[in-house]
Image (cartoon, rainbow, N blue to C red; front, side, top):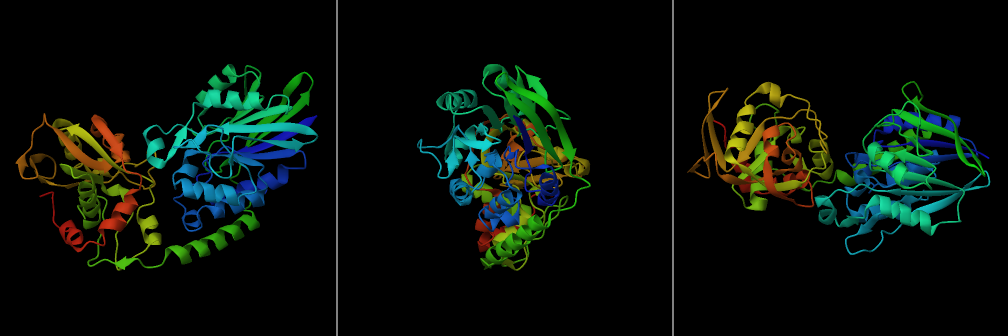
Length: 455
């Protein structure tokens, strides 16, 4: 029996590319084809998803004819309620065999596996979500060890299937180890680390493929299933660059965008003064975030990079503006860092080439790293070097461990490597945009944001 599988992964809400991918999927698929996604399809940087609680993504999956999707970390980032809302609304099964709520309950609409029938073949689809470590409890879920969870699900379905496919949002290297650990898996479709395979690999008689990221490619696997097992006939990853955008996906995007804009544009309040923003210059928008972070954690210092924001706030505040200004799903974060490392990071912030560097890093949705902004500190400098720092009017001590409120982006040392030398970190469950929403309404914080800390 012949079987064809078309797959995508890590679309990350690049829906214009996905509209091209859909055109190719429609061209290549037939009644003997499975269409599968490896997760991180829904990235909530997208207004279309924020304003529809993810249902815009579900409608696109359904329109394209997907048979199943596994749950990546980005499907989790907008909270348990949003994930359940998407999964319950979807006719496309949401799969994860290792994802549970913190209390051990399953998520509504999420299945550990599903069995699909194609060309008279019974095909078991299971998959796993990535372990986000400290974020698991913070976000209200737990992640079981993926190899054992997959093995348990396969054993549970023993005798009920002819082909076993795993959609694994854990990474390509992990999937090589998975193929070596579990003999019963016929095909692993990889995701999470955005690797593009030119053609499928075979490890321990298991076929592995990965289609890169952002809808720039689709993967195609063709196999023959017999009593001897599953044989790879052909594989490829096809670029979507020259494909035409699918009209139906374009229409879903347009309708979702209009619905989202109407919902998210409702004014919440008006800021008392325009909070302007700049990547290089100290500005009240980023100062406000630093002040809000320090207030939340009641610590020595608030610290944030101006690249976290894409612009300022003028007039009224709405959720749409907040998403546009601060699209990164980064969390308010506490950590402790020694004065000498803090000093090095602050001084490097005087270098415009550091500030204008590409801000790439996990969870970051801006363009540039940006200048460091502080709350609770005063920094005297001569444009190139720091001359003196005081923290809460006390002399700076390079050996002291300072308590800092920041973001998980800076915690990892992104943009400012010295900041990775920290300890005792923990997170708050909401995002930096929520700090802006909370503190831009407070008159005293708005006024204080205009007070320079770098002199």
